[in-house]
Image (cartoon, rainbow, N blue to C red):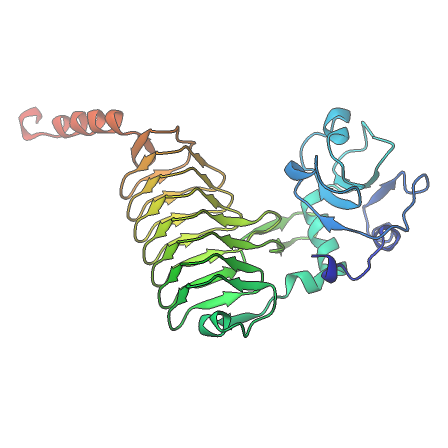
Length: 313
């Protein structure tokens, strides 16, 4: 990311936002704003990031929350509970302000080129694309920049790796819809197989990660910043939304749908056609629309069948 940050300094960002209503800046006169921006981070990772990073927080900002972040510049909604070691951009829509910041200063991070998979295997792609030894990408596979793949992988025809995530936010303040930038990577480990016409998006602020020996069937969609643990198998037509966490050796059945932000524990089973909107525990099997424990689903299904039986009419 460093090469694409263009030497932007925090003073440049403060100067821009000073002119943007209804933004307020706090603490910019007390700290060194001439340092260069080192990166952008989701807040959940900002406890361990280098000092010269930027992140945003949309919830209630307490002093404890603010102090837990190492970021030098924090975009937030309210003005209370300031930490004097940070610069604050106060904006009623912090996520939108972050998007505006990226569009203004880091547009080169957003624009990525795509390449034919065969060219990537032959090392005819930029360094931001890496394909490991003995991996095979069939005809029609498209690979976007910031895609890294291990060795001994197979990607079948027509699949798209590392495209932008579907991540849009409506701003009431500006009366328009903003696209959240895809700034992170798609990382695929060794011995992964990806079926035909499957799409796997890259990450927004955190990487999309496919663990070793994962098997993904045809016509599957994997959303931005999702993490899939090693040995997991995903049946045809499954839809996995953004920011999903799937553990190790999970089975996701054909045409199952996993809503954004859900967490699936190790060795869980999602039966075919299930719609998952809540977290699933390790070793648990869930079924139905909306999905709940499989044994409860079978009991409810039997009761429903008895309830509409001709004998009960």
